[in-house]
Length: 390
Image 1 (cartoon, rainbow, N blue to C red):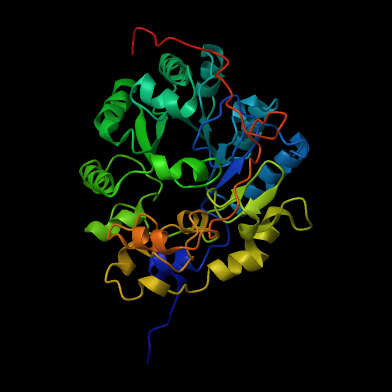
Image 2 (image 1 turned 180 degrees about the vertical axis):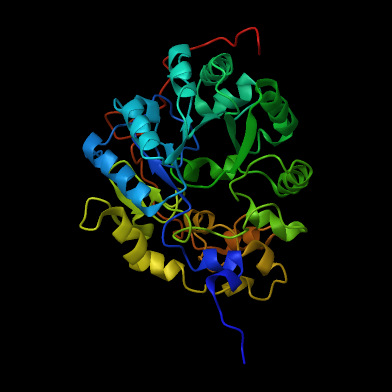
């Protein structure tokens, strides 16, 4: 007689692949408003959307997340601290015991606000920085952004916030600075978090020039193996085909364990696929977020067993699972094809053979635009100089 199959007897990764009753965590972009114009911004942020969720609607989402027992929510943007009810919403989430981790460029994180954040429970803060030196960072995030981020770190440290996170998108220009990023985190008693650069949003136009080379990908893999304390959010599971898997589930969690709520309430499969192709529903519709998560046809399809497609004959498919869905989609590769950064070069071959019109059309999204509709750079409104602690 076959043993009874119970949830506990199913391997954890397999259970996650089938989807959960609620996401483990989700990303919630509070606003598209931003005072920077990072060249890799996954949501092409800049201008606030007039249909942005109201404070009451935002609190209703928190109520739903609490009822669904969502572990925590990643709050981002845009720059979330530009939203007028930012602190009120944080306080409401803490009151409902929904853990919050929010990402900020640091430009609005004053000493007073750092003390306010340090007094709150169930809260984590990520300061975004993409260079260990100003020249590298500001080439991506805008002049003065490095100094602003470092001063925000100073404020959090002085307020005894605790172990905040330093969040870095890995690019061709900063891979050589991994040790410096690690030293920066140690200096503040912070934790380093590395994220993969996906060709989403404005990143679709800069990915070719900024994504790490094949050699740099291998360097990154070996460095992560040697630094297991560095967080990645399972961002680099495509590198696990190089050998021993990196820490994490090593699978695409889109629509299975993660998703994104955007500033107007649209729900997407993951933060990196903000495209109508991956729109599952809207929280303003009957049933709210819970109905989208549990009943969306898109999410149901993502939870079905996926074909290995072009990767079926590769002995490393179980390790990398074919790579990142967003990276494939925005580079014009089929979803059952190889990751564009496949460590064996299959992605490069596929990119060279793709039709000229395979990539989805680029839109300016919520980028700041000039009179002709062309995206324009938004200068950092404050130009801080790093303090003596730097």
